[in-house]
Image (cartoon, rainbow, N blue to C red):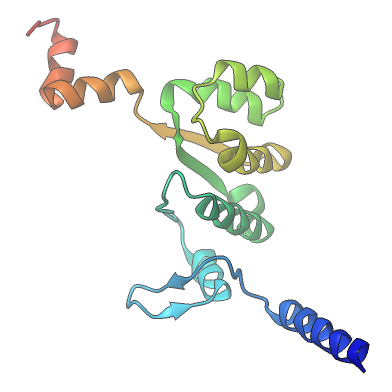
Length: 167
């Protein structure tokens, strides 16, 4: 009798997990604050020309969801899909393009590119998916050296550097 109860509990749990088609690690909301499921997100994403995915850079669940959405959108859009990410500064675009197009090896790319400390766990799966499927990937972040100038001197600091003026 005990084995039958245990078997029933295990079977019930497996059925509940198998019946769940949503991405359960994440709670999603629409613009009105209503809870929606992953299928709703994907349906809307398929209609969009541009998708901006706001994230917490140190949250691996965000990166997992980005990867899942990218995979599902790729199944729909194929070569029309283009990725862009601020994890890469624009001065790394050539390295990123060479890696995605399989001109350079992973170890060379990772040695030369400016990568965030959580690249291997959180970002590499997305980049590698792009590489495996030939998806264009754009580096969208400002180079750190310019961000540092703006942080210290404001946008005027960039203009001063372009005109040769010193402060």
